[in-house]
Amino acid sequence: MRTSTLTLLLTFSWFFLNNNSALGEDALKQLKQYQKQEIEAEKSLGKVDLAELLRQSREVAKQLQRQILCAGKLGILKKREYKVKTLSFKPGAECAHFTINYAWFKKLAEREGDGEQKEFILLYIQTFPESERYAFETSREIVNCVQYGNGKLTETYLNWREYQKKFPSKHKQMVDKILEEITQNLLTQQQVVDNLCGSWGKKEYRQELKHFIQKVPADDPIYSQVKKAEESV
Image 1 (cartoon, one colour):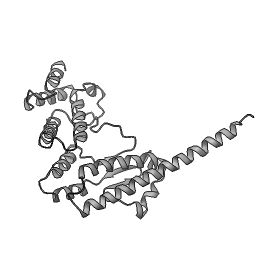
Image 2 (spheres, one colour; image 1 turned 180 degrees about the vertical axis):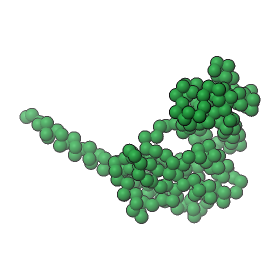
Image 3 (cartoon, rainbow, N blue to C red; image 1 turned 120 degrees about the vertical axis):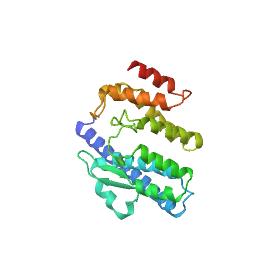
């Protein structure tokens, strides 16, 4: 028996709609779990890893973008049962985007005193001051608008290296990823060609590499690569 085109289309549509529904439910379930951790962090500081919670806030928001916000269902998140203190959402031109409430993380981190959590959160906010994130965001953490030439990228690199030395076993995956992103920005000359910010060029890029060579110890893992890059610009 032949299956009609209409039957196939209806079957596919049913599967697509139900699958999307399930995906949306998964994202909301993840949000509810995150909500519990957020409450726990406020009640029992020290027992909840704020750096991990910050990472989770980004992951939860991205899932909500993919499964709910970009499907035009922003209204669901306005319900009281889905309210969280660390994330807010608003419509965008093509898809809703989210903002991380850095002030909440900073407040709890400062209550921690001079501990590792405070150092990580403050350094993270300093590195990524833009708390607003858009849908379809790439996997890159530091985007094309990094400023070259003023030494800030080098300073950021040194700050994370120092944190890594002080707390070698803490948040290793996150710290490694951040250092990898900074390294890519230092070594990827193509960014000079692809610059979308219009605020720097090869001159500024070379200045940043010179800053690095002057400030960073010669035995640093990427020192020789940066020196080679500076010589070839």
